[in-house]
Length: 341
Image (cartoon, rainbow, N blue to C red; front, side, top):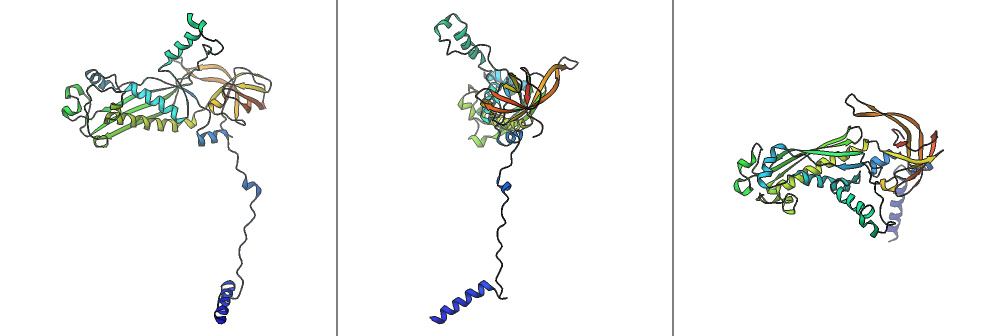
């Protein structure tokens, strides 16, 4: 047993010293510089692009345009068309992206009607005016989302599909799939400039959703419609177009308005509701008269850079900025994300 213990010790020594009899050098870790432990500060624009939590432009969604060739088919089937459903899907999808501030337009008459009821109607006296909202405070849109159906190919399998060849007119049709394509464009409200554009296409095979169904009498906005190949294709086209559109919003320059202030302090009409944060910096710009094209459309503005503003306080719907570079602020100026950090 003693011999075995000695052999074990010798084996351990050989492993440590190696065959050459030298002790191996164990590398020591180099000290980490203190500045390497700190996270580098990124610009507001970079943070916005990475987290999608930056300032949001205000967008209203307009009604989609139908494919003209499909109108006669809609009338035969008693359908209102697929565009109204697309408008609702795109509106809901935009809200869910958290990339833009979506303004209600489809039900805006109901919103206005309620405001008038509480503030200006003969029945306004029955409402506690301290709890009602002021009229004339609805936000205006910075951009409008418009779109059109550019391809509509229903799935038809004789009478089982619910269509006749005469009803289809000049439309292409399939027995094994449904195809829908849409184009969407985000248009600047003031200049008419297209800020972003995208196309979406949905192609759904009948086997994917359990085969064709009878479309006669189906409500295009109902749950039964959504489960059809045409309904699935419409939703897929909307989803693809929306994903492409919002991916291009990183390059759109957000603007805010100076609603008050003097000297080196200003009040900006945006706050936590648009994901602004203390420390964000913006260019301070004095906007002059609009520059018009030959057809009278606004091409841009005569602008003068005044300086740079840093947010020192962010509230729910407004922020307070301090001028860190340049001259004094005045109501009516605008703030814009800088082109560089």
